Each structure stands twice: as structure tokens, then as C-alpha cells.
Length: 240
Image (cartoon, rainbow, N blue to C red; front, side, top):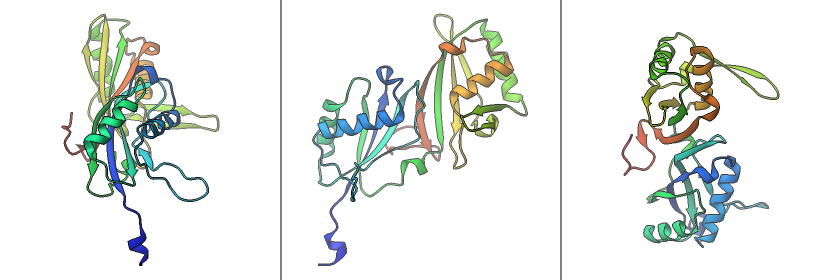
């Protein structure tokens, strides 16, 4: 029997799930572990790597920062046996913990392009209380949108890095007046092989350099979409 014929069957799944308020402050690593446990509780025939330290074949798109919730967490996982899509959905939904909802799932015809390689844009909503009037917020955003340069200094324990925010922005930052004296900001951020920028970093620049009149420390950030080439990561979804 040839080596190819001895290879085990592989079945690929892609799911869109949430990271809701109860899980806002857990790390990406802990979130990944949460999903691994859910797949095991669902008793799905998950595939594992070979070697001395086998791990579940589960991968995610762009990692979410701590403190950010999401409607657009995508994960790919592999099964060793064929299971009907409806059955996978049923088992997984019953096994997800509080703070995670399954929004969509597809069994794929072939091994997909890695999520990390496919994603090139993230879209966010930031809900934040105003410190002044809405006209002041609109003026700050207008100044930001027309500025030639918007630099953020990202500090780590080892170094301080200068980041040009504008190179990662896709379009303008938009604002709407929301209920209770809050503003809702929306923005699209490019994800490139050379890096990206966090929505909290954009908000910091808006407040510190353009006097955006909001209470930055009370901002709630939510990722609402991840796209690749302007398209959703599941073919049946509609781009926002």
C-alpha cells in the first residue's frame, strides 16, 4: 500500500463565533483553550498533530486584544471522520460556554488557506461616553482624517516603537451620536504582513493629539467584521 493511500482522511470546518462580555478580559491563548475544551465536550472527532506533544488542529484569524469583544472570531478545525454539518453545529452549540455563540459554520470541500494569511482587514465599533458636545467629536475626527501624519508610540518592556497610524487605516473614522450621551465610532483597520494597529491605539491618538472629547478609559471596543480581499471569510456571509 502506498504512503498516499495510508494517509488518514481529513475534513475541514470553519466557524464564526463570538467573544462576548463574560470573556472580555481573557487572553487569546485562554480563549483558544476554551474553544478546544468545547470541541472536546462536543465529542467531535478532532484531528491532532503527531509527535511527542500532539495538539488539536485548531487555528484562528487575527488575535483579539484583551478587553475587546467580538462578533467576528473565526476558527478552522480539522476532523478525522465525516460528520454532517448540522450535527457539528448541534453538538458545538450545546458545548460552548457562556460568552461564546456560534454564528455560522461550514464544512469545507478542501483544506482552506490559513486564516492568518487570508485576513487583511478588521472592522471595529467603539462606544464611548462624550465629555463635550458631539460637534467637538466631529471636528476632532475631521482633523484626524486630513492630517498628514498621525504617530503613535508603542512601548514594550524592550523597546519603544514609532507607528504611523494612517498607513493602517482603511477609509475614515466615522461617528454617530448614540443614546445616553455616548458616541459610537466605527473604523476599518488594515492587517498587513508588516503589522497593524489596535483600535485602542487609534483612540489614544484621537484623544491625545486631536482632542477627541470622550472618556477614553470608559471605551468599549467590539470587533464587528474580519475580511479578506474585501470579502467575508465564509462564502455565504454578506460583507458589512
